Image 1: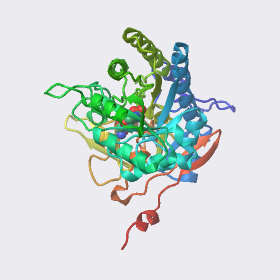
Image 2: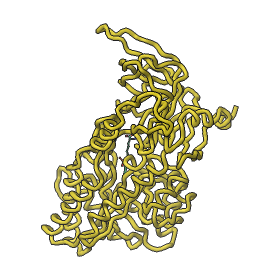
Image 3: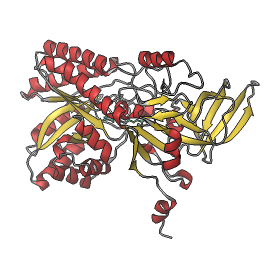
Image 4: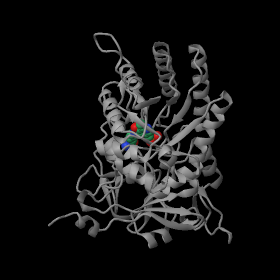
Length: 476
Ligand code: LLP
């Protein structure tokens, strides 16, 4: 995190401000750009002291830096526009709402020129509540319900991404019943590219539930992807808008995007050869990786956009097909680094390990209910004490939650000052994506609020759940 100068002059020498700043620029920092450590040692987010924030909103709390969110949204939009527009085609950036969606966040994304990708009726409801035009919303899902399809058609969504051959028929029937003209659909294909952080979050290798394979079955013949594309073309109730590929999440090596793009463009050319219909759009999905711990290098949108543009350009030239309009669906890369989770330290317990070392177990007032990712994927995070600095050296620590199981780990391994104590505020960086959106009420713990910080002021985007909220569902 960057250091801020106290105008009254530092009482304590801040920790290597120049080096910290340089490190953030070179390798990526897990903190949002508005996170600074003032000379008195306490951290501010966009000008708000975390101690004041905790006093006003309580802990745990997700603290979201609005300017950082907007800047990341713009960075993706601008980078892809700059790379593709010189080639004579455009790019639509869809913010993947599954990473985190609220009415305000959907509006910010839209104000910054992004559209919104939804994966369920619930996400669609939030995007609509935010006032987005249906035409700028996409609907995904490998198992959409009839009512989700009907609502999407009522809202006039810009695209429904079809995920199975059976769904071609279902969307066509829903569109016929709706009577509003051909439904714009994309067909999601699996390119066989396996990319990303964990098997559960990689979605384009073959043995999983998403999309339609490019590979024909053992008896040869037509691939499921081609069968679905042709089925869409056969239905007058459907308009075949594009081919979609999403290869995984938290991808730090961009070469998978290029391999997938080649395969999708080849399929598009094959379909055009066979049917005379050139699919106008191609979506290359999301998955752009971020830094979770200091030193991790996130994907640079400008670099990825440039490399993808030259691949798409070269492949289309080889195939003698005009360039499609492109779209992408980043979620994590827009919202992940914008947010940190603020906790209060409770119990601190040294545990002697088998090898003789001591690990400090630092328990906070949340845990796997507000961030399931360490337990689910073994995801690494970074934490710092943010209410003060300490002169003590760092010791091996593990941040744990308050839930009833030993896998309730928030940060597996981190150095914390030896004097970390009850009442300290501790922040965990980069929890904006798939934190609140995958939060649970395990142990009847109410879910924390999402507090946005903008220019020195806070605003609650999603309020803290209460025990009354939980009991309201209990019918006695
Ligand atoms: N588009 C599609 C079709 C997707 O399935 C996903 C994510 C995205 C876009 C956005 O991917 P992103 O840019 O956020 O990586 N819960 C897991 C991540 C699951 C991602 C599922 N699909 C996690 O916490 O890591």
